Image 1 (cartoon, each protein chain N blue to C red):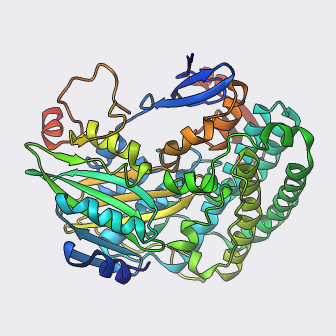
Image 2: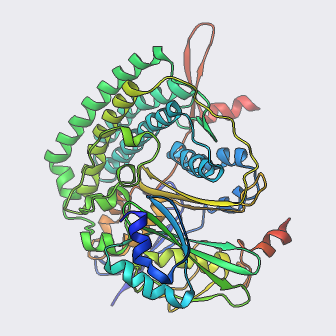
Image 3: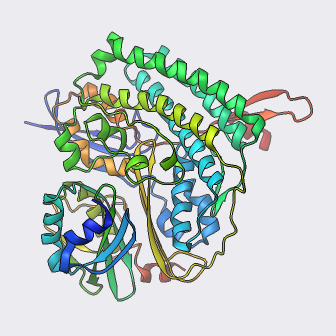
Length: 143
Length: 383
């Protein structure tokens, strides 16, 4: 699907749609609408999740799901409150996201509920609880 | 009853530290779990604390073997953030060096795969032939592995007209050797015995677990970023995408060997069609708030960079998803049902990434005399 077709498929549930070119687009949705949207994508032949990115924006943790819609790359964002960032796992729809969600949990402290194996992936075993190295406060503390 | 076999972090078949926890029932592997992070260097955060120009040097040190594809993807992402389009000639030079990288990466893989299956003659031959490609890289960029070619807005070195015949001649040798390897891969009994029906990843599992690169293509998934989400000069070059259906170690090898032949063709076309002109555009390090995603096809598969700018000379966030990381989710279906003795060759068949560079060639600029110095000698010289 090209970017225009992906935009049509996302429909009214997507906000702030920005089509960079026919092969790349950004969009935003609400966390409660995310899973229905992903099921819709999956049933329309979008099988490949490229990555999940987490960004600390200050008050929120922004989670970006990158999907390969062949050829368009869809970058779908949700915002989670930094005080309690919680999201249900997407591994039931996209099993390939299993490691990316573990990465998101330990690096940014997002609680991915229902994850099949929520263990640490990169950080050492003796890394202190509640310390998330890609959060802004951790950066400020270190510098 | 099942037993746990821990493999790693110091692993006999890998030069990189990773820990695998294999659950076995008798000889058969029934489950696998992985623990990463022994070589985690915090590069995403380090990139966010350096300016865009310094980031190029860091990005190309993420992986020794894939250094050009990393720096190219980083530069493309930053160029997209800033709205700068590099000159056409620079795009062709990037494609040429990236394809040379793919060839030598696959030849390195072939050598170690042969070693894993006890076929050391092929290991020696593959690594001997890989030297042709490393010589070309040295000719073009001055570095056998690390080329330091890319910069934001283009490339730092041009390919000179007098270098082109030398490149063509060496490519002829490499292509001949690659064709011989393809014949060997199809006919040799040792290779067949060690690779056929071993570590099978079915197409539906490859799709389900979002496998990338040669691993996905060996399972019948016809996907390649160079064609599907074309970038740089690839849109002007014609090439085919080798796809196999068996999904086993043999198929993963076959895809890589066929890709060597395709890459030779890509480089020949790029050398012919390369337009003249500048190789670098000026670039302002201060980039207004924006975000960009770029994908490329590294030797091991889809490589993704995401970057967000904030109006300063440093990015707010850089996210990198390397191809090997994208393949790990597919390990479980690949290993389940395999035997313990097959673990090293199956693991190597995904071509987990490592970089090595343990020798230096000294060239006397007055006489042209070439002398090879080992790492040990180099250490003694420093003292």
